[in-house]
Length: 621
Picture 1: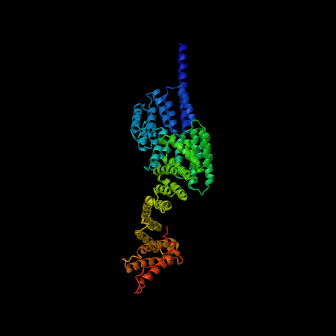
Picture 2: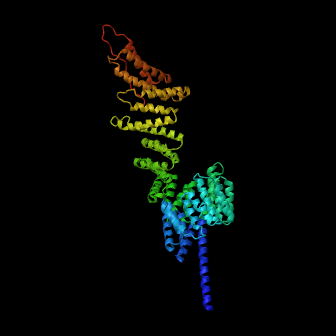
Picture 3: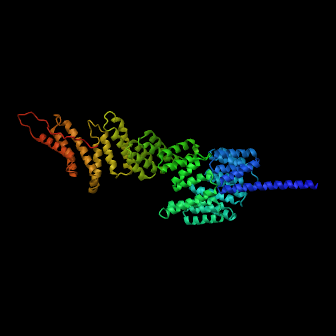
């Protein structure tokens, strides 16, 4: 009997010891997750699963590791195994619901969350806590607070002394603030309460100090992050936050120790890396930091190292592309982004980033020489998506458009400026309209203006340019160049062989607007003003030449036309008395007027106007 009793006691002791070991293993895994040591956490959890495959809790925390690293499909597979291991364990249903939320399947998520709630034990706040966290990930902060704080079965009501719940509530309020639905005071209050409730919960302190960082209290945040590090020298997230604080400070106040702050940021991030086991996941976060720190050479080297890892995420290609682009290696950048966008789950592609940089790279490669217009068009298609996703990308597109204009690829430059015109800045938008018009006009002039066969095919570019200058003048009625180019466009739209003068009002409007500006503006713009007078004068020359010898047109009508011509030519010569073109026209009309006003001898037939036509005369283009 004694022997049996001892055997039972030994067995019970062994069971208790094993339970303690497994509990310790879970605690260590959770600690590693909080410290962002994900490889270590996965190792602990995989060992626990091998040793005790029926323990569903291990699957839940392993699935969460995958979620934190954006491996949604892997997380789903692990949560499903957890349900298979123990269908009555609630948390794996919460995990599956989280996956459903991230896949935008709200109905399936709700069903899984309700299934989890139905399995909740009376004092267990974990399902409500992690359901709240799921909604935080999905950025549905009101739903998160319902599970965390406000509903009768919320985590806080189930267990009001769980400091981790208070941290999650703080996260939800911070999310609401970011979404423009509140302030940070509720977030800070809950982080502070969590820290008071459990002084050993480092995450609560960290989140308080992150709010300081977001309030631009750089010195205070640095001091407080260092206090965490002093007490917990191996707590990696504190080094990351310290690094990011230095970087943000450098960017916010570049005049104050910019290089020193960036260097301190990099040093602390390297420390963070050393504490997170140099895993691929932590290297990816290092790459993220290098993007913000603009450490492009380091990023290209880091991306190259990551790509050697057989388990490397396709996201590494994004870093290769970013670094190569910033290092002006545009072909490598184009190739990397092509591969990334082709391989990545569409949900992971960020048009505001990926299409922006691929588009810029494609245009840069396409400009050549030699120019590859199809590739440039592909780049512009990408840039259109990037601006649609984030209108502030229009600034980068302006630079692309300028490079196309410099390369004299005017039609595509106009298209690029049109994409850039989606800029929310009214001033930038007006400037983009100017460049749309100029480039479409230049494209017509260089390709179609002297092509008598295909000239009509180019007129849509003139129409588009005219519309752009109309938009320019609507936004900025005082911009003289808008009137100037509308006048030039009107001249090109008129019949070139038999001009109707449809462009005269446009030129007259430009001239009146310019003259009204006064002498200083006239002095600056005299070349364009002279062009206007010469264009009008040339039109009258063409019209007069057509009727000069026409006996059906009265002398008075002919003289009236000469008077109109002389009026503008006098103004032209007042600007530049040595303008040969205007002098030729003036001499021609003077001769014609003399002939018309001199009575013919009675014995001779009525003469024609024998004025000598100007040589080489033409209207300015």
